[in-house]
Length: 441
Image (cartoon, rainbow, N blue to C red; front, side, top):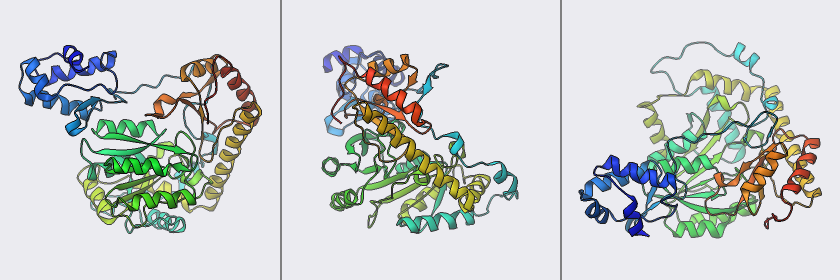
């Protein structure tokens, strides 16, 4: 395999070698998992210096095209990330159940909030965190059992995860992620040159045995979604949390990052894994509940992690707009807005359970404990996605969310009313008809 790989790679500079490898990956000549030649071996074959090949490999790792496994060599990523990931528009007349979005109608209205929030200016040198927002979030954290002394406001959950990773992780480090899991998180880590270690999940959260295996494999960090997990809707139960903490207690050096992205619109209780850990971060985003365009989240964690993120922000973006922080504070402090969020959570649960019941009436059993999405295992993703598109439905192929887990499709139920759910379930049954068969759930 390596000999064939050498014949595929061309170039006399780091840039041309890198371009040759990336093009071969894009064209399918180098398949995911393919092992690249050693730096010295390729340098000798191309008659360039080892430093030239090393520079090409390092850049490719930062772009997420390859992953370095140390002495085990460099391999093509199982999820090669290229310059952009384009999302095609859903054709007119197709009902979109693929986007993972909240229902616009269930987001708190912002007209009155925007009219009434404090419009005073915030200048350089003033406190970066809105005191009122910090107070209401701290109260919510205490009620949910989230620890931490300091808070940091950042531009959304992914921004927080990236910043925490930047403080603790280096290219080549191994990071445990849920599988199936959030595809954008996979891409983020791959572009930072990190190696993904998949951890299988069921509806109760990550499997303890899979997490233990990942820890024994030398992971530096574990990113977990405590509830409303994408794409499965899993929520960590109290019993599962106890098991997972027992595993993590044996590996105190592992950084734990908890991404609680749907906290305000999920009826599932929060079970945290960070208690007593040396390195940890908990992130609470407001995008799913208040507005995806708000781009705001609050994180806490061990003192060193939070302070490191804060210091890095000072030399970069400095702070999150106080206008955005005031909007979040106004909504979180308003009893009517809170009732709106509670209603939204109940509606999402009703629609999700309605889809589950409709599928069950067609002999299709799925689990869906929290969040917007339902994960349906299938034997083959593309035929099912295409068959549903022909029936007027757009769903997301599971490939975007998988590393090693079995195929499936993700269905966003956030806007799906009961009557629609019945029609959709009937079309799903038809799409799964022989020769396609439903995989074991």
